Length: 137
Image 1: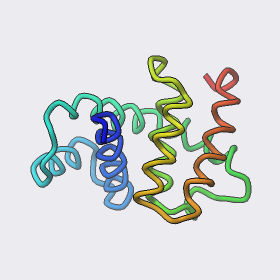
Image 2: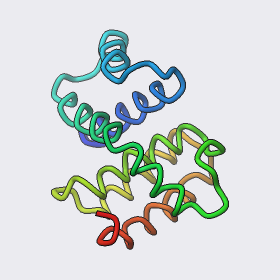
Image 3: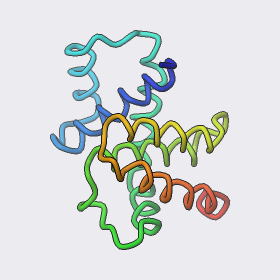
């Protein structure tokens, strides 16, 4: 597994913990580093993803809500929501990463950590966001 995918998985796990505990980002990350064996070389990208996602969370959630037909964010599985938030941040704010790569990584992570229907669901939302990027940024 590539280091970037590993970092995305860790970021998803941290975003998940933030969502279910409502504990501040810095505390969740510190607890995560203490409790999990995570390569220190992954940390800069993890921190960038988590802090970037959480600092743009309102705009990301609004975009996700406007893009996901017939789904309210609070009804989405938290794993899917965490994957979507992180990938949306990448698509909107990390110009050095091809959006197709961000979408593919999100799909692959969903295949491992979520339901059988999640990859298709995540692909549909992220593909729509990618097509709207110029109007969103």
